[in-house]
Image (cartoon, rainbow, N blue to C red; front, side, top):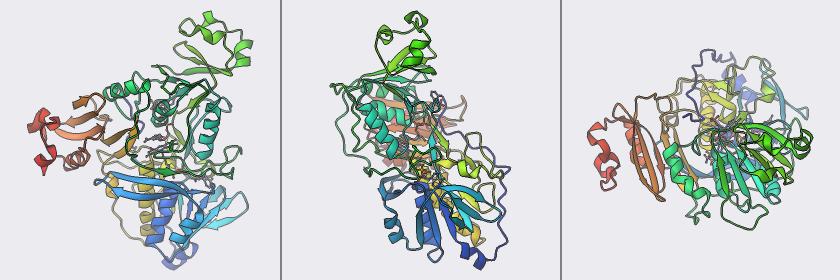
Length: 517
Ligand SMILES: Cc1cc2nc3c(=O)[nH]c(=O)nc-3n(C[C@H](O)[C@H](O)[C@H](O)COP(=O)(O)OP(=O)(O)OC[C@H]3O[C@@H](n4cnc5c(N)ncnc54)[C@H](O)[C@@H]3O)c2cc1C
Ligand SMILES: NC(=O)C1=CN([C@@H]2O[C@H](COP(=O)(O)OP(=O)(O)OC[C@H]3O[C@@H](n4cnc5c(N)ncnc54)[C@H](OP(=O)(O)O)[C@@H]3O)[C@@H](O)[C@H]2O)C=CC1
């Protein structure tokens, strides 16, 4: 089973070449960051803290930028925080040496150390950090019936379409799909996934079984929210997806559904989710195409829904299992493509097969003085055994902050150690209104067959899975209020031999925390 984050490849081509600028010359041009998402804003804030007298320019295509609030370090690698969309004034007030410019970057001259924008401005830099995020990787191009979700505008568009919809097809088995199938009410959902269990990106078949009843039940009563997010509706901008050459706004993140009504045209509030397992989309046809090609029910013998052929749907989705579904629109929740557009004209960039700018263990790209952080980059260093990259809010924050430290150290020609957060993968989130904590190689990613799993599950309450190899904990999935995350995080980091404990490790009658104190 594949997790979306694969272990990085060796960055043998990446050879950062610090310029021969004297420190004073270097200071004059200052730091430039492209992108006002969480990676870019965190990078700017950290740079400002480390280098309060140097000019820092943040170029962002979106008028609103992201800010992290209520940051809580809940373990050595685990963190929780709220996210807000804020105005550029707020950042400039908090960090007086940061100037935010609302503009779209068009190109870069890495020899001259200059960034060019579409409105004709030139920004020289000493050190540049690219934090341009990503865009939805859609199953089709330029099909008005197939939409992706990334920023505030795309959610608005989705919400508007949903309000008139009777049925929607959701494609993909990752974070967005998991959240949508839980949130959508008053609209039938056909969920098409490649795998044989739901939520494959985040958990295994056991955890999928735990969540399955929630696909058809009414939504759980809201517990205390894990995180709160404030989003402001924005006007179309240089970040508008309506413009062909535009960048998107900053990606949504924790609790992005709050404040958005996800209701279709039908009255009932219970979920109506039908999962089509082990299939992909073969074709998306408009009503006209469907009629023109003379499609008939007998062409789709596998389809269990013969009414598709009589009903007048705006769009039809043919799956590889030969099932056919008419629907009002399709959500392609099929991952992210790094937004590297303006930078790839510069052939010096080493790009990973997933389209990200390859960065070394100091967040340096293959181009001198150019760093990258967040969704746009691909971690290309030899990772610690229990860390891998996943395009997540938490990693965007961590990379942005670490990139800033590396930029300052590089300018000052100092050595810097890698941040501890890259020692252990840790993700705290919420699915189906349950707290979900993922630690280390939680899905035994890259461990081969030589590992064992310990499981504990109480239906409707909690699901705990531990991945062990050679008696040592390599990863864990904790669903529900298990209170085990800090202990397990320590056990993974310490690499203690747990074989003497056997299955007692998950015995609910043993207070495991006391055991290891
Ligand atoms: C619907 C949704 C829900 C999510 N939920 C979670 C979650 O619960 N937990 C979690 O950890 N992660 C979540 N994520 C992932 C998380 O939001 C992203 O990993 C993270 O926001 C990436 O941050 P970033 O700063 O790298 O990129 P982005 O937020 O995409 O920011 C990129 C910025 O660059 C700007 N830009 C792009 N091109 C240019 C250009 N040429 N010139 C100038 N500016 C430019 C954009 O306008 C934007 O401001 C979610 C993502 C989505 C889409
Ligand atoms: N709570 C959280 O932490 C959340 C995080 N996010 C993040 O936001 C980003 C975007 O989310 P999302 O779009 O869901 O991306 P994800 O990477 O989470 O999931 C993408 C899913 O789509 C599948 N897929 C890819 N291509 C196709 C295809 N052509 N046909 C069918 N299925 C396909 C992938 O399968 P495979 O892996 O086998 O290719 C995977 O199951 C991600 O970085 C995600 O981590 C989003 C929402 C919530």
